[in-house]
Image 1 (tube, one colour):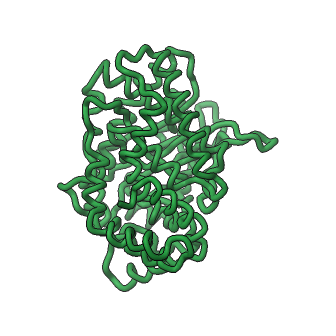
Image 2 (cartoon, helix red, strand yellow):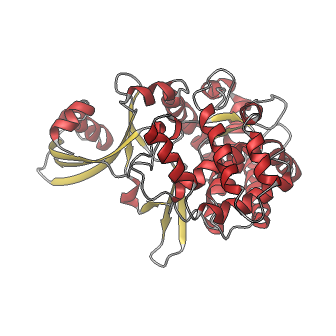
Length: 412
């Protein structure tokens, strides 16, 4: 990325700014930045709520040693139409609250029971005003790589992600009993009657999925008709998913728990070693079934069966109970049956998101893959959505899931 583009779009990225971050991170006041380079590491369509940059910094220490460091900078969209939509959902405010308020206390709680694995990347700088942005560690330096979007997550990878989210859920549930104010920024409903910006996305996706399902052997007829009818009630159902009841077991949901937000680390032998979750911008304090349905329904690889869903929920529940017990959670600990019932009550969330996130996973040409392409009414946006839902591999997973959804009553 050339200097003129950086200065125009990201004027805060300067030698002086990066020098300050390095000095704070390394507690070394004699660091001098010699040069830096900015690239966009993700293709368009890999992220829909911000610009993601990788900054490589060449610097010298007081002893004149020459070194290199890289950071990931997440920047709020400069495009007015996208920024307005996302501002309505307070996505940066919520992620700032996770890093400033929630994660330090969650890590302290989990550390008290001997759990030292990390749940999120380190944030070296957070700026909530002007050009809103975060400066994160570059996880690739530690061997983490993005999960393979088009393939999805296999059973073992899902197990590991569910272990991490179970720890996060348990610790946030405990934290809420100690300090209710810690969740103050996360009562905002991701789907609500007050902010209609994404209504067309869900409604159009139901219709588009129904049109495709009308041509598939096991979904043509009844299931396709249910999807098309669901367009009229989907928003109301979504609002109910994000309605929290104080008497229920509630946790801080990641809120966007799908394959795009999972970084995996493997050993040289190929053995899966760790997973870290990124992008905590749409967290919501409510039913854990929001995260569970979102992950399982949008991001499971094609060979993960609905029987595997039960095994994965059992695995999540065991991790959740173990952590809640060790943290001496003072309220009723949910049984596995409770979690299964929650998934029945709130699993419609996964239905809403899987209809369009699965084809987004498969899309090769992402040149128009932004919020405008998903929500807009221009010819370009309409053409993008037509390509999205007519992908030849969409049927591979969606037909299987639609039959599962129908058996569970999610389409009624």
